[in-house]
Length: 80
Image (cartoon, rainbow, N blue to C red):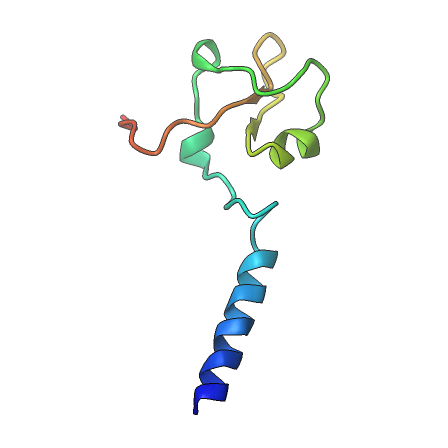
């Protein structure tokens, strides 16, 4: 019985490690919905989307004059 529990726990840990990037959970759309004027830069100019995501940041290149790689909205901030 203990062996089965150990195996299930090991499988859960392995699957969990594959489902997150660099040990970090993926950011939600709500966390990345930061107004362009409120964005705080998270990378150098020209950073790629994958480099930005690997740093644990949000990436949005749809606005040409805004910061593309930026820190996510804090979890405890009100999302009105």
